Length: 75
Image 1: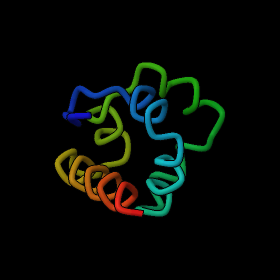
Image 2: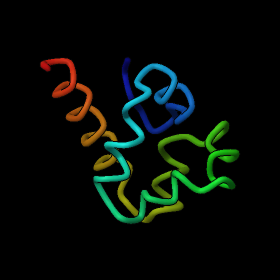
Image 3: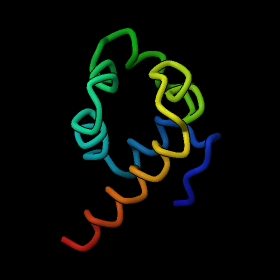
């Protein structure tokens, strides 16, 4: 899957269900992904939206996601 700033979080988590747990470990700001309200908002949220809400640069988020997915595939 090619991850861009327009990739929807719900699509990522559907394809890689374990990914959210890894993201939460990446930065304390991403712990919000477990809150009930955010779970509802994630249905429409893109990488860009996550970047805006957390203050983490979208390129860093994309890079980390790609790195985590590649590492997981090697296991």
